[in-house]
Image 1: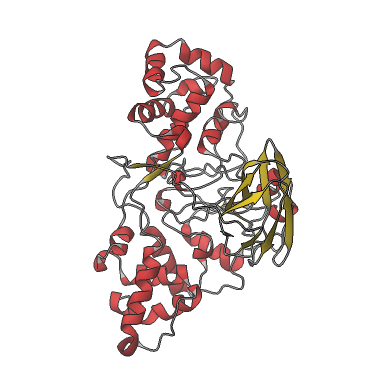
Image 2 (image 1 turned 180 degrees about the horizontal axis):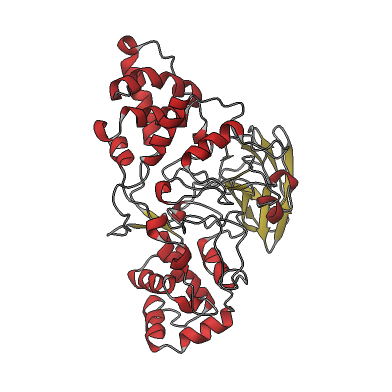
Length: 444
């Protein structure tokens, strides 16, 4: 039923319209070249990156990675010595734990499902609610959380510092600061977690040109994913996540990102999870409430709880036939490796690239989850206007010792004004879509 030729010939039309690709599909015989070109363009959006980004203040080293791996599997990081990071993040289970809601050291059930750790190097804010801006901030959160590992950081530092093998490992990993400290613990764990790059799958081989790597049904699912079903609105890029926060209509009273930002417009919004290796990481969602991928697909058709905070990227009124649902699930399974997933045998680190030259303007637009331009230069005392030309709600924020700013909910069409009374470099970002970043260089 699902031949590859049939899938490519008859389904490309639907997702070309859905993603706004140029051209109108008129048939297999007269528009095959246009369809193939459009397909290749979409495939390229999911091509695996060749390098792993590391921040300049925590560059990669093999010694640091090895220390992070040892710490990740060390049960001394929990107050009773029974839990390690790896206890809840098992590679064979998609770096999750296979249960809806796990229990921490005190024996209490946690309120949220254990998230996957695959491909976090390519994302932004971490945890389901984004309360940690970096992996370094995230790394020690579960350790000190009284509901999880419940280990006071001072006690952990003292415990590891009393271990000669550990002190030697820290000295090798941090030659400029050869101490066991909470910061070095976080840096080592974050370095190791950045190497959690998911393995190549049949989908990746197909993207790279192996036409027979996917079945016709899976290609049909890919077409639905990027078109009619609207999945790619949020599950975009090689890791299949926009690293943003969305209310997708799951029932419950957990405010999620709204509680972190103290912003009602962000209530019930949770981070878009990556979809790599998701065939191993069931159950799904921030609350672990959906047992299978078929359940997930059905949720978007008939399970959405109506409320004002629903994401504007959420497809509404979606109707998929049984055949279409099966195709979509089949495609999602193609994002899981056929053998037990391994970490990369060779790490290709890359420091975060420097920003483009600053543009000397004072009006910035927001469009398609991006600031345009992404870096500007102004004089001290200048005012910058940020115009929401997007279809989404944004939340402009600055956290800097010299300037704190929070726009609240900035709706489409609204303009906000930010004054920069001090010289320096300021990072402006969206609290709902944290990969949206604007760098403002303020001259004296």
